[in-house]
Image (cartoon, rainbow, N blue to C red; front, side, top):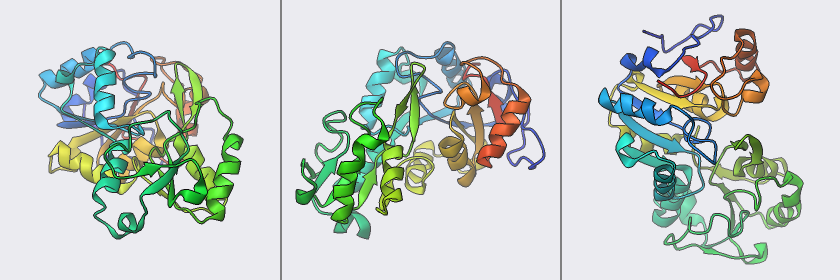
Length: 300
């Protein structure tokens, strides 16, 4: 099935039954993790089979996650869930992007940052900065910047961070956000992500530098790993219009929305259920973003 990369604004993109209907149109796949491959607890049914079929067809697969963790941590997690290393080619994460930027400091912004920071996630994402040359401190008075890796607990209200963020803002500390996602579905429950903390800091007047989808740097790395010159032959697959679809469209790839992920409540479905076309149209309109196509779940 051939699906046009650029959808007219008044046209409903196709609602497919599975990836097989669009697979021949693309040579490479950029795959989100949460809401596509797994729900934070277990891999979704049919994911391993879908990946197996794509690899049989010699497709190149790069896993790209807005996870505030090093890439190897995601590799290990996928392996534990039964998604073996042979089912994809590369993994990149927003956390890896942040680590490399802080370690190498190849641009003026990162070179001007100091070597001490406050971490909003405390010990939850311990290890992200190991080897970067950055020391985590508890007191904003001793920090040169703040890094938002995530909340201390996923179920935290955002207001829990107002005091810390206010103290950071009073000192004019820049924030580095290692995950632009606002929230994530963890086994069906909505959990706060670092992007919400970043948005809160911006509301207070703070400066935030983001790593990950939909921003430029993470796609530059991902597309280099993909090594396919014609971006129209690459399909970005994700469950989030604001990050996966927006980022893919901005960088010239096709986009496939997994309807049963983060937008499931608005569509009134669970993973694998076919959404009502009218609800999909309303969803696209609410975000001002239209994917190339939509599937109920990442299945073949």
